[in-house]
Image 1 (spheres, rainbow, N blue to C red):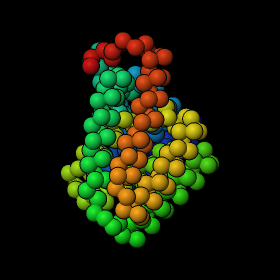
Image 2: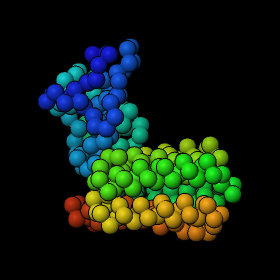
Image 3: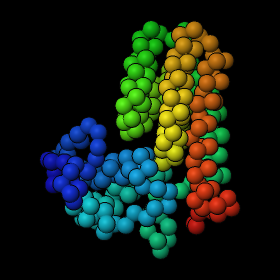
Image 4: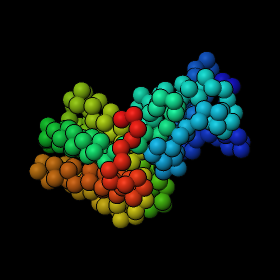
Length: 247
């Protein structure tokens, strides 16, 4: 299996986007399976609390359980998948309370990052953010939601990376991973995508003008649509008081 891309049972590549080469003597199959499931979660093709049955995944990717289990283990480490005793693996379904708690911490950490960005920001860093913003805007216009997701991620990694605090940057990334699966709910609405695009432009303007207070306000505002959309969808599906078994 090493040396060529893993394919789904229908013969198509098991992932979308840029081609992922399977290097020799590396767990390429598990990497591709994990990447494909992650993209399905990000795009809303696999919903919160949806079961991930090992045999079904073996059939889908034409591989064996060892590769599937390794892929699910990697997704569990990222916080995208959880294992429930006697039920197996499923897409992690955060409760509204968990979402609120994660986003409360994210907001404080991301505000901390933009608060310590050294001003003025270099022209090179501004140009990098502008290029990432153009990629995101083009994806929004084209309706390419997977590219929207990853270009948005790259924009914010570059933005928070300007703070220079490696531990803070790592923690922001880890918390962002935990809520990959809820981003789809806001991205499903064109007005949310356009608002995100405009926010990126305003963030760049604030950086260029060394307007820290504006950047902090934009950072707080930018986080609101995803949890709000997810919580509304969750409560429509599961009710307002139901909690996830095992949590």
